[in-house]
Length: 510
Image (cartoon, rainbow, N blue to C red; front, side, top):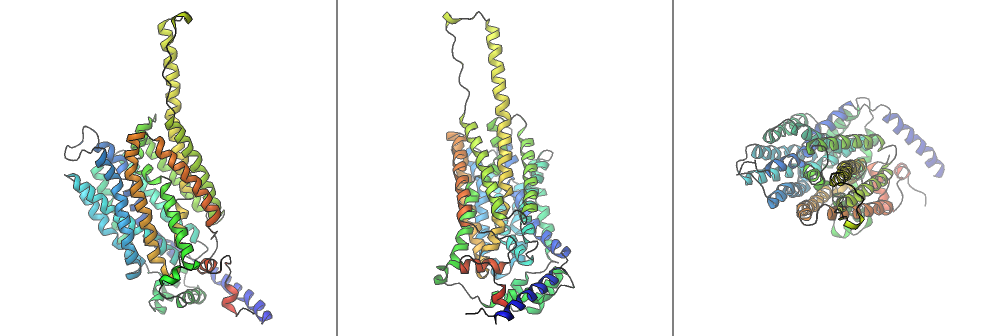
């Protein structure tokens, strides 16, 4: 049996390699592009408050829409509360109607929300509209990564898995750029376009082959897989692996949740999403222009926000290029270190204030005139303001670069990779819900903390969290680069073993 096993394993590997060599990804890329338009809308809507809040808090704002600190805190944070509700909805919809239809349904609350904000004449319309766009964001956040992971083959899953984050950053950058020239009401009108386009394109895209097999539609699954991989692709091997995985799984019971194959990947995903939010990325993005105003950055805040958007886009593109080359863990290490150094710098900057000038005793007069004394003081103050005006911007750029290099895209990708296949739809919704509830509490508290203590206290908390992220990556997160979804699940089932090919080809010798 050992000799047969040694002969069959290379044969299976050659068949798999020959099949993969015939893959054509053009239609797969089209399907992914159609889906991630929802992430474009998500990125756009999440930071909608950044350029809008300064206008609504100004004395020139419409009296019916003018916001105080508490109202501004709700407008900034209620989006994340809606996203949590959307994540809960996705927990049900992902398994009831499938990933694709769940993504398409997110366009309904998104469109209604933007209509309410664009035509708002009262504060409740702004808050309800913001909440509804958050619901849409939570639905797409829970559904799109799962859909992409299930239609992609492992050769490009790392790159395509980072596409949701990239398109979300494109959406953020589009909002920052439009806010330079477009009134805030028209920003809301423009936000409806990507959601509508997403629905139109997804009508012509296939459902997940994994879901079709779970419904017993083998012929349809084979047809979809051939459409995604190319007409010359041998679908037999991949379909057999998926079917084998599905046939060995049933509904998860409470007793099964106590076994490592289930609770370990779910805990890893939940903690990663919790830590991702605790780094402070959501309040920083939501209140970006207000933060730059308080930090007295030398450039206009709207231009600062646009520059940060460009840096974020560059970093996620870099992460997509390195995802399947450097590996997930290496990028997470780099990301944690960059965020730690930048948040520590921001903590020091926000805590350091210029000392008041000491009075010059009359007995130690050096004979300088009052005008000369004031000139020196002005030079020193200008020097301090110059350094203080550029350091917050640079540090924020480094923080955003670090986040978007690792903890941004990889957290989404790993969630879709490590969650148990049988519970992936529900578990991903749970992860997104916990993530956005954390973001809501942090984003709502951020405004009050800044008003009471300044930026120093929240930045210090973010610094501590970055250290925890570094340790968690070292101890708990597995490297999933170039592993199939079935191999990753086998890792949690066996403890430390990814390889499952031999047990699939032959019976293991005893």
